[in-house]
Length: 454
Image (cartoon, rainbow, N blue to C red; front, top):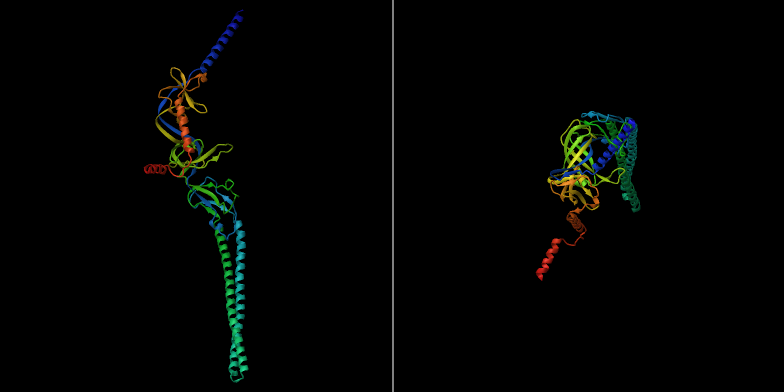
């Protein structure tokens, strides 16, 4: 019996305990969490993540002689490359390009040069022989002219027909001499032109050999100045490495960033981009060094957005200049950026959780003698607070949670809603106002002129 009574008593205690627990839990859900409307300075900041990179950098590219028209090498492979992130001094080794390609092309170019030189020598011999034949013809023609002159002189006392024939024969040999002299001159010009073309071809081949020799010596790439080595990327976004093929159209091997002038490259959502302006102050943190805090300012804001991967929303690129230098900072380090988009003094503000909204209005639950739904005109906001332009006063009590039976609570402040609607209509009217053929001032002036005439 005693055991049975004890069990019954324990059961009653458990039931009573559960009743109290659930009653308190239920009542706790009805507890009102309130706060006061505050007034003072409010800073509005936007938080983004970014990556460090150098504002200025120098690209180490293929030797300039490789892009020469007469070199005719359109791609070359990297056979050795210093480790990325290495800090180099001016003149220190960076990379080696493929020597075998140049050796093969240089051998062929030298053979072409020898062939061109032989062609010039052969052309000189042919030229001398050809001109010698023309000179012999001229000598013979001159002899014929002298001979015909003697014949003409001896026929002075002959009949007119004999004299006439001697004169005609002299004319023929004189014309023949003139033709041979002109033929020699034309042949000389022709041979001179041919020799000039052969010399030009020889000089081009000689220049190509010289350029290839220069290129061969330039295949060992060295740093033009101190810096940290960052691998470049090809047109597919893949980092350059040993075995990568470079071309004159994609010539960058590595980049040496200027670590004394860093920027943080970040992206801001299209909803917030209108708040971002060049020159705004920024506080930066470095994920790799949680205790570091840097200062900076907005350097550039992109005019055109870009879609986020696997999303319909767009983001805009924003570059933030980092003030000062720090040898521990490295490119591609992740930064946290707090961009100060606004600083207000003596503004009314409340927690974000206290503002509720429908499709057309924003309101708070105001607690005075009774709870009312107060329509408010909100301003800028930060991560925790929102500025209230109209609808509340300092030290008024507002609810942070929506009360029970909120649909039965009276709504006040409709004059604020009406004012918002009126302003929206005015803005739409201005935006939709049709363009006039002449400015407003000229219309006013013309109306005044008409009145004066009347």
